[in-house]
Structures are given as C-alpha cells and as structure tokens.
Length: 435
Ligand code: HEC
Image 1 (cartoon, rainbow, N blue to C red):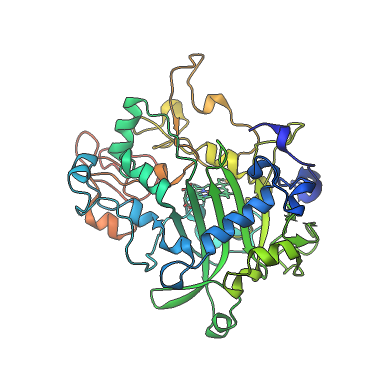
Image 2 (cartoon, rainbow, N blue to C red):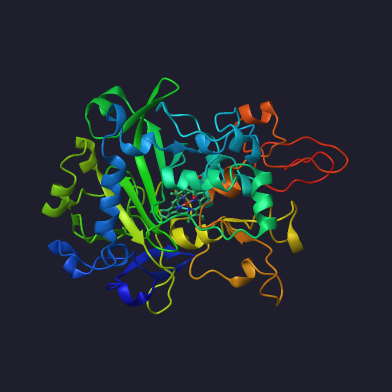
C-alpha cells in the first residue's frame, strides 16, 4: 500500500485545539477517473470514497427477512461466547455451549462494552463527564453493536481466538495475525428514536429490549488493503457531524468537502446533495440509505508528506475526533503473553488504545509499541491485525456466569493465591485478580 495510489490531499482548518489554530490533513479521496465509472486499478486506494459506498451497499443490501445484510453477520456475543469453552472442545463439537456460533436467528443482542465506555473507564470518569473531557455532542449513551462477516468470523474460530487462553496459546506459538482479504467488520451505534421518527423511514432501525433504536453511526473496515480499508458514515441529522475534521466524500455527495464550523459546534449541518452515480448505486436499498453520509475514508497512516491522516466519527469517536486515526489506534490492537504491565507500560492484554489524555494515537505506529529494547525479535505485544475485538472481547475460560451476565468481558485469569475472574478491562492485580 504505497502513496502512489493516493489522490490529492486537501487540507482543512480543524479549529482551536489547545489554543492553537491547527491545519490538519483530510481523509483519503478519489482520483478523478473514479467518478466516470472507469475501471480504475486498486479501487480501495484509488477510489476510496466510491469503494466505501460499495461496502455500504454490501452491508445494507437486504438479506434474510429483509434485514440489512450486516445484521445477519456474527455479532461480538456470537463470536466471543461467555463463558467460553476451548478450541479442542469446539473442534470436536462445534455446537457445544461456549463455542462461537454463526447466527441462524437475527435478533440483536446487547453488547455492553464499548470503545467509548472503555475510554471513560480508563480515565476513571463516568459517562456523563464525557462533555468535560473533550468536545463531545454525544454525552447521551448509545448502544454499540459490532458485526463481522463469515471470513472474519471463521478466522477467529479456526485459530481459537475467542477466549483469552486461546489467544495466549497463539502468542506462544508465534501466530502472525492475518485475516483473509474477504474479511469485513462493522461497528454500529444506535440511539432510541420516537415512533414518529421510525415511521419516517429516515433511519435504519432495530428493536432491542423492546425499544426502537435508530442507526446514527457506522464504521466499516474491510481487509481489501493489508492494513485494512477504513470508512465511517453518519446519519445526516447528527449534531456536530462535520465538526473539527470536516466531512469528505469525493464520490457520493456535493459539496465534496464540508468544512468544520468552529463557532457552531454540535449543530446540525445542511444536507449535502447526492450525485447521480451514488443515487444509482443505492437505488436498491431501503429509503433510509439516502439519510446517511460518508464522513471520510482512510487508506494510510499519513499523507505523502508524512502528516498524520485523521478520520473520526462524531458519535463513535466522541471526545477524541480531533486526534482520531482509525488505522493508528487499531494498529495498537495487540495481545501480550502474560497478564500485568510489562515495564509499566501496558495493561493486559495488550498496549493501551488511548493516550494517557484519553485521545487517539495518530500517524505511523512506533516499533517500540511492539518490540522491547533493541532486540527486534523480542516481541512484547503482538498485533491482532487491527482487530480490537480480540484483546477487548475475548473471555477467559475461568469466567464466572455472574461476570458474563454482568456484560463482561471476563478476561482476568485467576492469579496464584486464588481469586476469581473479574469483569471488565484492565490489569489483573493482587490476590483477587481484580482489574
Ligand atoms: C482511539 C482508538 C480508536 C479509534 C481512533 C478508532 N477505533 Fe475502532 N475500535 C476501537 C476499539 C477499542 C474497538 C473495540 C471495542 C469496541 O467494539 O468498541 C474498536 C472497534 C472497531 C470495529 C469493530 C471491529 C474491531 O476492531 O473490533 C470497527 C469496524 C472499527 N472499530 C472501525 C473504526 C473506524 C472506521 C475508525 C475511524 C473512523 C475507528 N474504528 C477509529 C478503537 C478505536
């Protein structure tokens, strides 16, 4: 994945950060030929915005029961059962309780731990304090549901990566994580909407615990590039949708670049106008499809001059949009061999997702994140091929039913001297194994 394929990189004024007016590079953009429908080589890098919409169509195309296809994929609870059983058991009997299961019914299942709550948890802050942490129009909690397609699900199952001890075994065996190119993962965010809003047909909806939820944000990552292809979508009505980084869609909507409005944060942006090419592409989807906008795509850590690329969703990356880099943060998705912070740096099971200030890392990854000292072969944390769910969602064989029903993840293995598996993320410490 070289800079060769990149189009122009436009710059937008990002607004005031730390008292300085900063100029940040925008998302990836299509080369001019993409709009003509021409057969452009390497479309994920050369026509990233067109490619993002093609991915959107793939996941939104009605499948069984009329649901958008992504809702028929495996969710995190399908992939990371709690309490889990081990690989040997599931190889002998894939249907055993505690084995990952490709869903045959398509009811949404609650998935309690989110990137957002994890971040606030790390900072020791309650969700309501989100507003104080950064610029955040979304202090209302939302429901986050993650799904992966069959190739991504099968990879996790084949390697026994749904449970902590399986991940540890693979660490010992030196697995180099490499999802197949057909892999696709989706992260969706939902908020309760009124019956009136639901009837308007302007939202993708689902029912969870008797409540009607509307889709407000959607990340799609696909393995079409070695470091994945990254794109993010928002409901057009989202307050603050283009704040800080602007909105960038060089294929589907005009104006192609909507600048941030530093003096009107958290307000709704005027709806952009659809291009004929996109209108044609989404014609077979539910009417709600036209109420979503591509916020940006990412195909490399930096632009051609080495400045970090930044892309973040106003909902999912609320509070750290100004520093958000899908690729860099996901490059830090790692696991390590033993619980506990090596050299005081990393919480189990890998290096931290966020900076100590609760922001995203961006730009090129630092080799020191993965290797210790000067010895390039001494790994201390191993990348899980950009998939955060593996360090975040895998449960320990020692999980208790109580921990699982509290939402998990249940990652802490019992420590010498006794102590039960505890819920939550973080470092196991002391005799209790508390995070
Ligand atoms: C600062 C860190 C950070 C940034 C920035 C970030 N993510 Fe994530 N992402 C996470 C974490 C942590 C998870 C796992 C927990 C969860 O599902 O909320 C995750 C989960 C996901 C998933 C579900 C698959 C997986 O890896 O488990 C997708 C898809 C995803 N992110 C896409 C994106 C896209 C697209 C962007 C950029 C627009 C982005 N992310 C930006 C941290 C980040």
